[in-house]
Amino acid sequence: MADLIAALSTPQGRGAIGILRLTGDGAVETVSRVFRPLYGKSLSETPDRKLVLGELLSPEGKTLDQCLAAVSRAPHSYTGEDMVELHCHGGPVLLSEGLRTLFAQGARQALGGEFTKRAFLNGKLDLMQAEAVADLIDARTAGAAVNAAGQLAGAMSRRIEEVYNGLVDLMAHFHAVLDYPDEDLNPFTIEKTEHDLLHWRERLEELLATFSRGRLLIDGVRCAIIGRPNAGKSSLLNALAGFERAIVTDIPGTTRDTVETEITSGGLVLRLVDTAGLRETADPVEELGVRRSLEAATGADLVVALFDGTRDWSDEDQLVLEAARKAEQSLLVLSKCDLEQRMEHPCLSGALRISSRTGEGLEALLNTITVRFPQGSDTAAGELLTNARQADAAARAKRGLDQALDALRQGFTPDAVLVGAEDALDALGELDGRTVREDVTARIFSRFCVGK
Ligand code: GDP
Image (cartoon, rainbow, N blue to C red):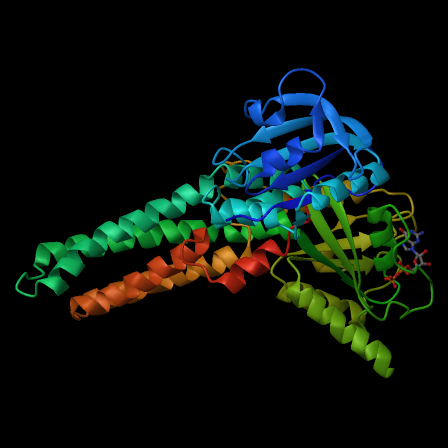
């Protein structure tokens, strides 16, 4: 039994149209009672996915709106249940009255993600596809949207399924040996098993290797701007963001905490972090800021080390250079190139020159960053692992195969090999949701908006 749930599926507020959705047992009959088709048959006799023009009635029986209704019956609907969508005019009052009508007919308000959760529970989507729905809605770049759409179409699910089925086949023989101990594991079987386990482990490794790019596609590139006080960090962040996000002053040490802003450039989300100026300081608050800057630099995907072009090289610049060298990726940049330049240091020969005042060099800076983080154009849509839960499960699956391989090579009994392989299967099952725990699914669907 699926109880009736209803929600507004378009954003709150005024709009050209607003869509009310209802799913559950008896959805079509329920709407039939409050929707009067203008021409022809009642909704109950309307074929699936055909738009029907009619009048939606209020709980008191008054005409609320002239709108379109679409019916999809189980199992051929998004949720796998009987569903009706009402395409109304997008007035907030009318839509809330429309919902009141559906509630008066016995539906209850749907929770966030409840439609998609039902789709998952009814086997219309696996868990990775359900997560892809949320990713598609949340995508901030075209690349992220294309990858999510590919995952929704099942690109990632097929890869996982292939490994899953491969492992099930592989284990069948080991189970036979356990069930019929007279049957021996011959050297040929051991060799073949090792070969197969290695093959599937490689597939998982390839998948895991896509996560570093997939993560950047979704979360963006965390880019810390570091430099001595007054090097022009806040000015650079503001110039890039195109608005005043950080406080720009000429008093050294005013950025005592980190300030973060997000921009999109070349299909890449850049999370720019402005940090406190790096210098030795006796002020405890400023010192805390300096420490945070170093932490931000350590956790960043890219460090932009800024050197004030109008000043001489100093010990503080040395600190900045050292922090940049420790970073995974860094770019050295000379600031204030609209003013007379004094700064000289061997490490700066290839540095980019920018002016936050005139905008000179900013495009080149963004281009350089984009080139450093190419965004998946060479990867088929949906083949990038983008979320930490999925990456964690894939990593556990790979560890299970490592254990199975170890057990096999050390000549342990078949059940020792099976333990590792079964751990791998469990982890893969969590990925697509066939063995996932209820609290995990609850957390996943809580990400969704109401009406999805
Ligand atoms: P921060 O301490 O590193 O964040 O430095 P700010 O961004 O606060 O800049 C310090 C001073 O340098 C301010 O007076 C800015 O107006 C000035 N400044 C920053 N960038 C430029 C630039 O490209 N050209 C010029 N002429 N002045 C700049």
